[in-house]
Amino acid sequence: MAITALVLSLVALLLVLVVALVVVFAGAAFMEEGGEPLTGQLSAPPAGPVTGDTLAKAVTDRITQDGGDVSRMDCPRTPKVGQGVVTVCHGVVDSTDWAIVVLFEDEDGRFTLIPT
Image 1 (spheres, rainbow, N blue to C red):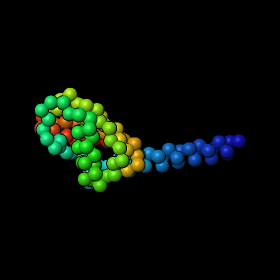
Image 2: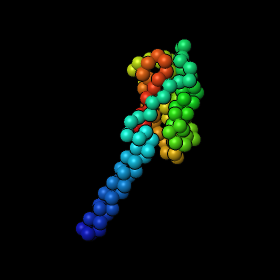
Image 3: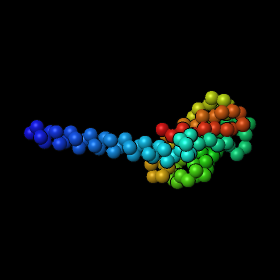
Image 4: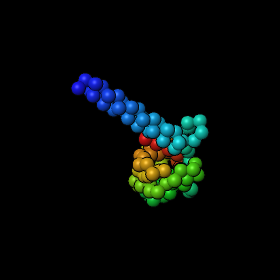
């Protein structure tokens, strides 16, 4: 019984390590070379709120530019765009579910994407 418990514990530990490596490498593949988060800009500076569809298109376009395959992206309506405004989009990138933090840098619609 002790040997069986030891073997099963080692198998469980190996599975946890494999999952951790997959998560780390999937996150690295989502980012630009050098490990920096992706940056982008809305196509037109918003005069007011940004619709979820507009933001989802901008996020999808930026990820696609970087070589990602986005099959779905959902973003909430964002009441304003300005320095420090944060929203979270949810989508499927390269067949993996992602929550993507969108950090707006200024009123012109520049943003940074941070995968989580």
